[in-house]
Amino acid sequence: MNSPRVLDLFSCSGGAAMGYHRAGFTVDGCDIDDRPRYPFAYHHGDALQYVRSLITSGEIDRYTLIHASPPCQAGCTLTVGTNTARGWGRTHTQLIPALRELLEVSGLPYVIEQPNGRAPVRRDLALCGEMFGLDVLRHRTFELGGWTTTQPRHRRHRGRVRGWRHGTWHEGPYVAAYGSGGGKATITEMQHAMGITWTDVREELTEAIPPAYTHFIGHAFRTCRQAVIA
Image (cartoon, rainbow, N blue to C red; front, side, top):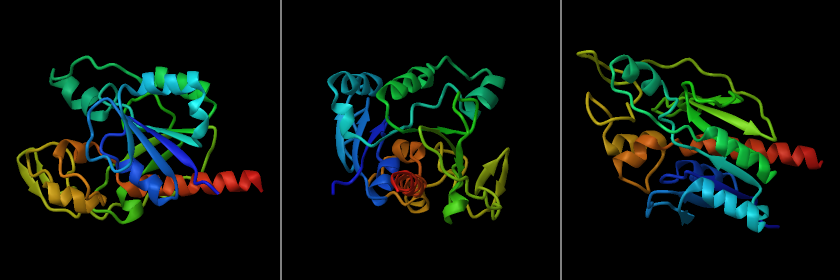
């Protein structure tokens, strides 16, 4: 029996992809930037154009699920909060409405992932690194299209994110896996905290989600589908 296949849009370096792989999926990625470290089959190009071409040609039918992690700058907490308040923000294109429309046209179940913030996604599922015993928090929201699963309990955080905040150093069990100053995590710390070893590019690590998240999602999806079939 062939394994289920997931199309990983806006794939970056493959944090999400690796989780689906570990949940038993075959993975194909697509990203507008060149991602030579992506660990699976990969299409270099615009994600919206690519999924549109797959729908038109009928090739979308080879997939079981679509995962999409579109750029978050138009709705993330930092952009709409601190940056805007200090006059640092700039205009960002919000891709989610056009993306969702294409995913609905595809007829396939889907997952849209975003950081916490004001992105126009449903909060069908929210995950945090503490749920999986990780040393990074990385809260993420997921919209689930065409399927659903149970929200796991958000465990109490063990302490603070380690680093400088407003001129004061704070100790804590979690690394700051974003940015590059103020006590932010080293590349090695981010790799260890998120379980991502195949890239050592800071930009890719700061944008990645831990594979544990999509391992959970992939397993939940397969369990849901098996229950429907049964």
